[in-house]
Length: 232
Image (cartoon, rainbow, N blue to C red; front, side, top):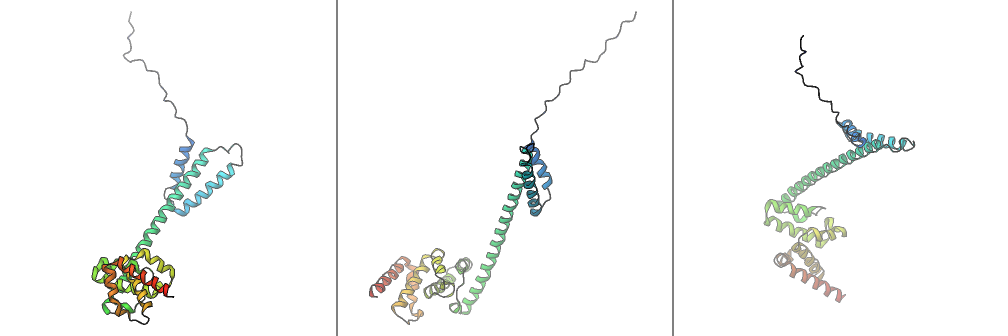
């Protein structure tokens, strides 16, 4: 009698089924939106956002769809993408504006430097933004150019020439120009009132005083203003 052979195979282990993760409709909604948004431009994102808003409004009218968290998650994701693109567009616009402003300042600096070299800077009226141009000229050429430009700006500010005709521009100059220029302008204005018809070329000492002792020059201008007010 033949003895039956025992199988060498081991008995199969019972199959263990991995526990199913709960479905997260919020994550699903976000993933769906991100897949759809690939390659979209700002206009397409905005259109998709409006569609999502419409869908959520429609769902809210049906009791069985009012609690659709996936729809609200998709809407939130479209809103996030729209805001992200808007922020990026605003940053790009700011960068472009900064580049254009730097180009404008450089071109105006070239112009003022050429006028200075021709000796006609004093016959030129300052424009809005020339305070920043002064800083550019200082960076380029150093103090000897700055001294001429500072005297030009101080004279214009004292005489209310160019954009300094506008009181708002004169007020803004207090935060844009350094104390020596402001003191020079204030002292010039009071000296011209004190001696009507005086040639500003005769008042070059005011620039030297304002440059070396801006606080003293400012105090002198204030004293002359008080004396003029008292006399009137």
